[in-house]
Length: 162
Length: 180
Image (tube, rainbow over all chains, first blue to last red; front, side, top):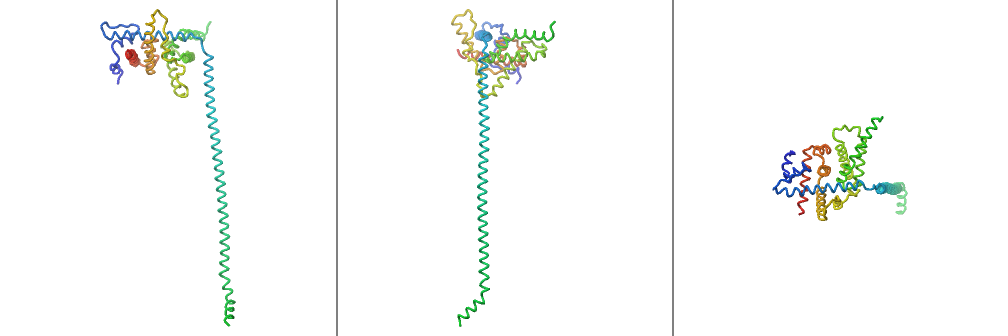
């Protein structure tokens, strides 16, 4: 939408307003126009507003400066900002250190547990191997002795028969 | 015999002397914070002093200074928005207090009351304006700059200035008319 359209379609903009803002110091209310009853009020309000701002500005401009107070306020804010910043940094750093320490501790405990379980497995394996070996020896011995002793056993059987 | 630098310094001193109250007034009306207006005024003239050599006089010194002040004000609010933990408008004077200021003229108590009420309504309307509308409105109705000067100071076209101004006036009119 072009500016002209915006301007023309402005619902609140009435002919008396255009005159007012184009010539704020030269108000020309149209005689007999009902709008002219409102325009002087608007013009008067704007005039009072300007006078008010001028009076306030003049008083504020010539007031005693509060540099000390301002500096103190700013330094207080600065100090508070720094304190907050330091607290946040300290909190972050100590939290990080604690987290790291905690993780290291957990890792150490996990490593100890893993080593212990590995040791137990190794012991069990060694014990099992020993048992297996003894069983194998027993098995071998139990299988070989009867065949070696067989002639004697036969003799003993014949003697008994006689 | 004065050197070129001394002459420039003297010229700048005259500019500061003649335009400082007006720049302060505009910034005070824009921010409603005397301390902030004072700080921004100082920053404005500091910046102007640094760039005084590049001022070619294409516009008036007042328009040039006003443009610096407007940009400083914009930067201030932009930075303020970033600093969310700071309470915005901490030292701003509220509308009722701002409306208390009226020149001590020969007015009856009733007229004073009426004027104060009007001023309060205009302040309320001004508070509801966008940043650009408010700037244009204050430059026109407080500083009484011409439209072309406002256009140069704000960097807007005259047409845009007119559009902002008409909306601002419409808002003031609505505020004044809506409470009767």
